[in-house]
Amino acid sequence: MSLKKAAFAVRDNAYAPYSKFHVGAAIRAESGAVYVGCNVENAAYPEGTCAEAGAIAAMIAAGETRLSEVYVAAGGSKLITPCGGCRQKLAEFADGDVLVHMATISGLESTMRMDALLPGAFGAGHMEDTPE
Image (cartoon, rainbow, N blue to C red; front, side, top):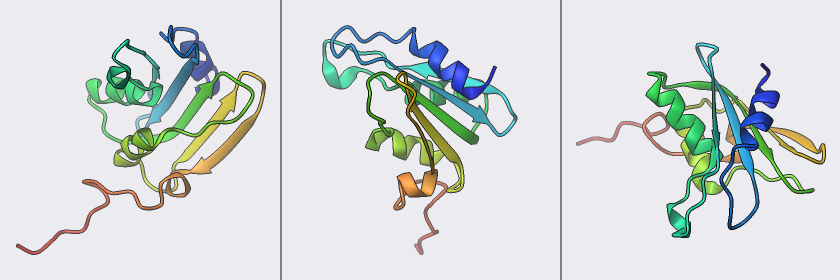
């Protein structure tokens, strides 16, 4: 199954009773395996999880730590990019040249490189060693 089909398929499983905005994400790990996640809302709004975070968690649970491609499928008629938190999460496990594809159910699509989505990424793979 393509990343696009996987992202749209898992989008149907999203739990979004409050916003009614369903999102699905599919990521390809460096091994070639595909992991998916969907948004899960909660009445305590900040306690929900994004689709990208779910896909990353599935990848990590499977013992993988690097991703090579991302596809995010959302509802609505306007393209959305991953939220700031998800951009940082994705950057933690991706190189700057990793492609992030975004699409809507209305057929709009766009692709950006990870370093264009989050040019100032930081974290274990992005920080220089600091002197003690």
